Amino acid sequence: MLPEKMEPDLTRIPDVNRIIVNLNDKTTPIVVLFGPQSCGKTMMTIRLTRWLRAHYYHVEPDRNFRPSNSEFYKKMCDSFDENVNSDYAAGHIHLCNFMLIKVSDKYGEPICQILEAPGDHYFDDKYPNMEFPLYIYKICTTYNPKIWMFIVERNWKDAKDRLNYANKIIKMQSLIKPSDRVMFTCHKVDLHPGLFVAGQPNVPQFFKDIENQYPGIFSKYENKNPISRLWRKYNCDFVVFSAGSFNATYEGGQCYVSTCDTYPLTLWKSITKNLQKINKNK
Ligand SMILES: Nc1nc2c(ncn2[C@@H]2O[C@H](COP(=O)(O)OP(=O)(O)O)[C@@H](O)[C@H]2O)c(=O)[nH]1
Ligand SMILES: [Mg+2]
Image (spheres, helix red, strand yellow):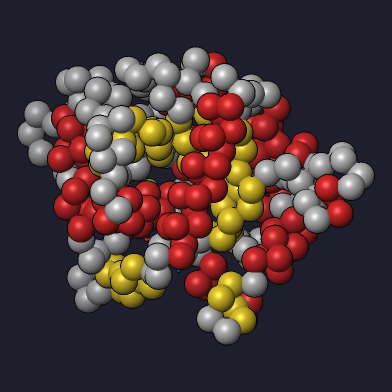
């Protein structure tokens, strides 16, 4: 039951089109984490935040992203640090599922904003053809440059769900401004130890499997240059990621141990490369 005076969780209200978001900073690029519920968006944000903070970046939730009277959002922001530092998986208790997080350098200069919206607003396997809620269209058309990070999992659910999700990704791609950047992240690679060689994930094999399992998601980014396509088939980044190793606890939660730094480092490198391209094209 909700504590007294606390408003209902607006991400769960039946009419998602009533959701209000405020993008106060209208110039700093936004990294949109696009993926269904439980694909690992929160844990990715937490793992990346740990790494960024260890490297002297500032990572803080934007407290004005949701209406100021939202007690639920305030609570989410208040518990962000606790979740980042905790050995328990935050996602499991769904305390962080709709946030805008600002990343700044050690001097406080903003670098990017990371947006995690509820995954079922992007794709719900029970309603695969459902329209995107209005606020997602609003985010699409804001002035902020954007990096759309499409999150996929190898062997996720069954072939039909993957096809439906691939179609939803393709639909989103048709709405993205040409000046925006796109990258793909294959999450939870730790679940596939058979695809590791000498402790390292076999990225080309992960890519091949994702290309086969989610038909058409890379097509729009095909490299048409006859020379460079020999070594670069698509003009977009594909990275593999793992937030950690997860174990069930007696209380019904999950504890986790962070993965090695290579994952957040590679992810951040790809984000910053895309940010540089955005700045170059300004
Ligand atoms: N094996 C594995 N499981 C993960 C990883 N990241 C998240 N998970 C699992 O996926 C669940 C949902 O993750 P969460 O980040 O909350 O997903 P979200 O709904 O997309 O934000 C977690 O409770 C974990 O059980 C990962 O890197 N590896
Ligand atoms: Mg989440």
